[in-house]
Image (cartoon, rainbow, N blue to C red; front, side, top):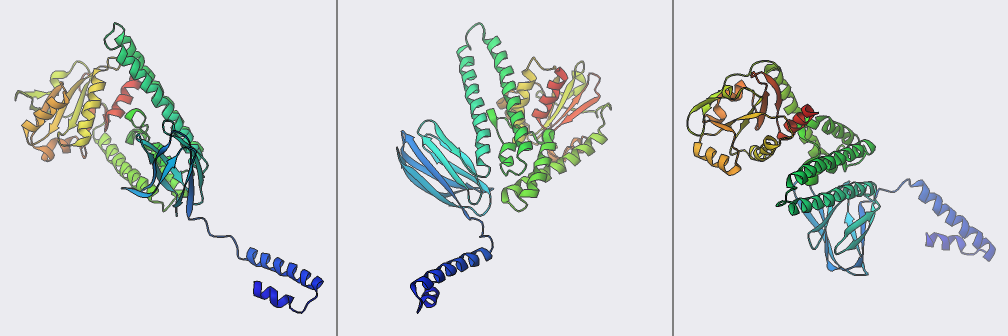
Length: 402
């Protein structure tokens, strides 16, 4: 452009040269405009400013669907600012880590400009970004509930050896339930208000107080909803595809569960089960009739079953919920392994074993394709409901209590 201008100006008077230079500049502007919009940004900027107590390294990593990929790290000192220019070709999740187990998950879109204030003790407060701003507001809400929960735990521990421990425990349980309901309401509002947000995936997987807000089949409608909205806005995003695969698996479970419910219809009598107990005596669930009986199918080598043992034990011991007996059927070819698992998990209900394991006819008779499975029977042994998780069973009992 400079050589073209020099050629145009050669041999012209000062006035003519000035007019010609203006025309050339206007031509350059028009040519630039005709090129159309520029390509979208393929990076994002994270700026961190330290106000006090900083003298440590800050790291930024990208969260892939199966691993954490380190990207960059910088030393940050009090009064200084660190800038991370992160390559971002599509929306995704990134982890900021710093000492004292400090970590903050952020959502980045190409072209985002996030600004954060950081201290050694208070963590990071972020602003900016296409969707990170309102995601951080949701995280702040959950963090507030966690702090309140920690305070309640401290009060409960202080009352452990006092006369009002039972009262404090009741207050703790009811308040914790209220907190979870508040968090769930907030999460549902987030999903409804931000259907275009990739961070819906993070919200669906939130674990306040180590308990998921959304429980598989019990909350399948919300999984289907997020899968639908994310499919519109992020059809090829790797996080969305992983979420989609999870939802597809959930749909398969739902179809299998509906088939099981049709074959084991509510109101029909449950098929007979008679198996050896801890003392090798044949025991049937009929011996527990008189109040509702929960048939609990599990396996000592199945991780979800072992996790469910602890949850189901808490439900069984919760006197505020409707009472029931448990008839637990373990599928295991090794009785000693089964007995060790029962003793380790301290599940002192009626335990029996089916040493045919995965070859057991009970699995076909009760349409068990995965573990654990729970089937609630009424006082006469008729089927009331079927569950695939202790959380779904607890929700059912809470609704019955109301």
